[in-house]
Length: 158
Length: 376
Image (cartoon, rainbow over the protein chains, first blue to last red):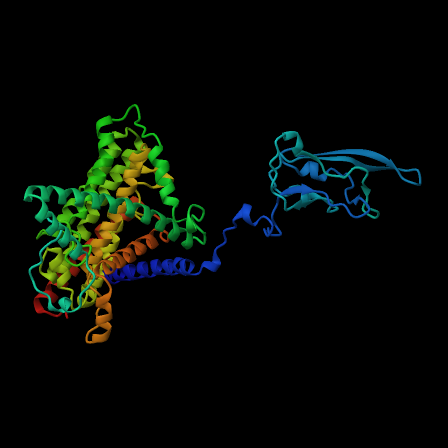
């Protein structure tokens, strides 16, 4: 019947609108739900979520050792040439040559924080840091060398 | 144009309790002016006072409604809203107005300069004309004319002229499209707004706004008129939301498709006039809705609860009026920040297939109720 469908349409339409209004009315009256972060004021207490991607860093332990083997998987994975791995050959105590990183150059100004390098890394040497205040006056400062000077690879990481 | 309207019907119920009233102030001013000046000068001075009062109300309404809209929208979207300028951000709209005042009012090279500059003024003048018959408090209105409701619905349809004028003279395709959409929308939604106003006119038996308010002394029409009055109220709110070009019916502006619709090319104070006119129109349609359905400045009374009714009578009538009006404004803002925008065909379907037939049927029903005296 046409008229039954018409009346049903009217009531279901009103009902769906009321459901939406109930939701916004709930938010209007419940100010605890507000998610706004008043950023420069709450810089000290700011809590970023775990998955926030600020920049690529290479963690070092207390002995100034990192986990990077210099396999260049991150360099290959990067879609816009942000990472450049400069390798060298170390001489191991038993006289063999071993590939290691000299410098891991990271161009923050090119990075889109896509996380592909982190996913590609087989030895979990690089992670995303939660820093995000990257503004500098000279763009040369955005080209970073991720491994600390004098650092070496951790034992047992192949 | 005397500031006070002399309402002839004595109403004993309200004489018992001396309500704090704007009427006393205006009567005192009127008497003092009559003692001091000749009648011609009294008329001129009173017109100037009324004009200044309306302009002042405009400015205050613009500031208050803009900050209200921004706060309501923020809280509904789980945001904080403006909170930097002044205490709790309440002076934000004042700062914005100052910014707009000092900006250049640019006129595009290809525009029709006369019409382009005339359009925002017409928008504002129409909004000002609509202020005339509204009863802001007990016996307090600018112009008590016997066809107040008809006057409001007639003058409010002039709004479309300023929008079409702005859209056409801007010489911009987005402006013209926005203006044309707005024309189609306002012309079609006026019908159901008019029909839902008519239901109350039928029940109250008068087009005079004080008459309609006094007919609600024993209960507002939304309660007295049973379900048909409720349906008329819902249709009225939907139709006036569309008439004032607000979301979900803001096709005339449609930021995402038409940049800003008819006021794309406007800047500075000319833009501000359109903005102000929009908010003042929202205030006016809500005031009309409050007058027709919620009893205007009439206090809320429940049957025979004498004590409760006495307490209600002590609240000034202007507070009742503005409270109801701002409640309706809040409802319309609630719509805006909840519902998605309609497409133009959905918009016209809603009017011609749903609102108009329902309100016509509703009008017949209300007429039957009024004739058979079924209302309370």
